[in-house]
Length: 186
Image 1 (cartoon, rainbow, N blue to C red):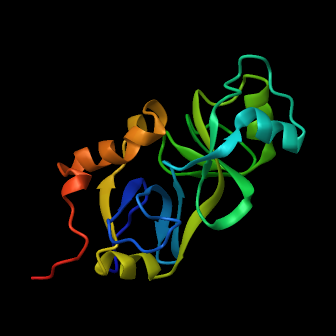
Image 2 (spheres, one colour):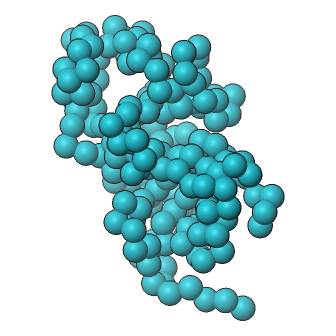
């Protein structure tokens, strides 16, 4: 399992996931290497809208610019920092290209562009991200904490948050309701 690369994959938390940050979560992995992994939870809206976030950080939001979009809990790391998962990737100051279409940006220039209605076509904003040290995610996979499946941008950007986890499970041909709490080993 040492050479696995889960960049551009979903992590689906197993029902027995004890960590409340990740119970019933769908996490999109933006980077995975021998140095560790970074991702954002894509199905946990918080009590904040795009408008209220922009008011807090002093960016004007043009009328009709998705002001009521939810902000998401992206994970327990750097929860005071915004992360914008978007497509197309575009040219921004601080961007991690996940693939040729999707990127994760942390610089304020993308938010300013969104405020003017000039940002990427599809985006979601999270506060915080999920991070794993070298070998940590692989260890969690060996302990059956996660299911993995190649990600679909449609699930992230086109579906309401409550449909994302079931849709990712469907990619595996599994219904979340039928997963057992315990893990089995052959």
